Length: 82
Figure 1: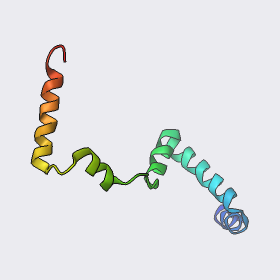
Figure 2: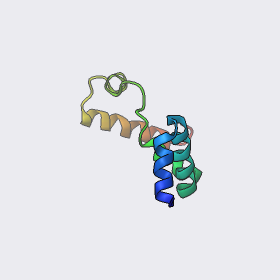
Figure 3: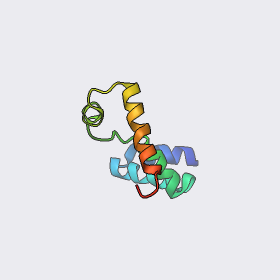
């Protein structure tokens, strides 16, 4: 049995947990730990409600008003002793 056939047999008979573990092992082997983590982060759905968070943060400010507020905060932070 060649490697391709062997992998197919394993994939067809393995539990989902075994397939998951083999997949993580392959990702780590090929990408390294950091690369594997970055790859997996692409598939995380995130959490929270972006629309509600924006409303809380920005209120009813438009883009220009929000931009001016950000610039004012940055100027204030640059002042000595601020």
